Length: 206
Image 1 (cartoon, helix red, strand yellow):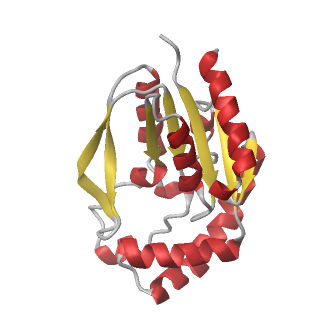
Image 2: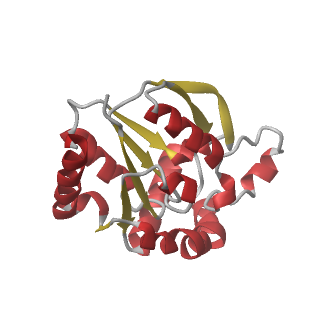
Image 3: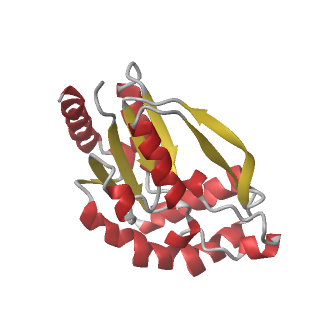
């Protein structure tokens, strides 16, 4: 039985990571593929007050339960199923529900800081950084957080200025150096995505 291919896709908030992931998924739709979102591995905060949860910096490495994320990927590499946690973005804590995930040939690990953690990087066969201008990322984030996560415009902008932007500069942007391929403008960069897909096919064929 061949070893699954692990692809890490990092980049700033709303940089286009999901678009790149979906582009890969469309090509390998006949291949078993699973997507593991780092966002779902935010630490459980049920022991904290709602106000304390609001003050958490969700763009800091300490916000993530990378120990469990690494363990789950290792289980998938061993062709074992996992129960992936689900995060409640309205309550700002981990949901009591989980999503059962079966092992797959292609494992995509997507998130802003998946290249920041050395243990995570060591599990990856291909490391990608999606690089998009800050002005476009903030516009996308405002639209997403209002429509999908029940936030107000003021709260999104305040969070961006106080936490998202500083964390991007300090923790996310520097992880570019770990990437095997940097993709400007995310899913719109068809040339880079074609190169990535070719590489995935090569790894799968080995």
